[in-house]
Length: 183
Image 1: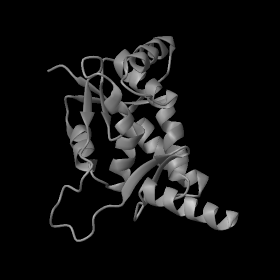
Image 2: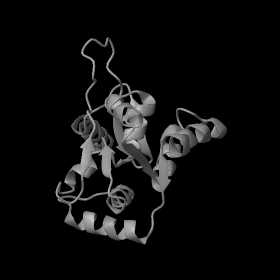
Image 3: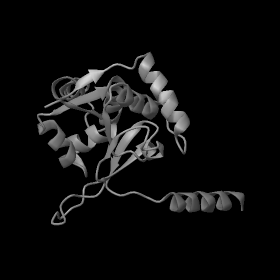
Image 4: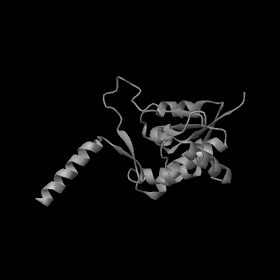
C-alpha cells in the first residue's frame, strides 16, 4: 500500500499538543501506518513562537519542537518549487493569505500532500488547487465538563485564551474611550 502524504500546519500541531478540538484527527494520522507526516520548516519557527508563553524555558520548548519536527514528522524545506506553488495558491485565493501560510500551503502542494489545518486563512484556497483536511474546531466530546480554550491567530502566532472577545465589543470600548478623552 502506497503512503499518503499529509503536511501539518502549525494550527494542527498546536491542536494536537494542546489537546484542543481536532487533536484526535491528528493523532489518527500519526497512528496510520499508510500516512507519511510532514511539517514545513516555517512551522518549526511558528511553533516556537506560539509555545513561548506556555513554555518559557528555551530548552524545554526546543524539545517539544524537536519532538514534532523530528520524531513524529519529517521536516521539509521551503525551496524554489514550494515558493512557486505558494505564489500560485496565493494568487488563486479568494482573499488574502499571509505569506507564511502561503509558504506552508506551497510546501504541501510541492510534496503532493494533503494540508491538515484548523486555520481559516486556508479556506480561501480553491479546493481544486490543494487537497486539505480541515480539522474539527469544536470539542469532540459532548460529555466534557469544560470546553477546550479557543484559539485565535495573532501576529505572533497562535494564542490560547479561556475566553474570547468579539471585535465589535473591543471597537465599542475603544470608541467610548476616545469619546471620553475628547470631552
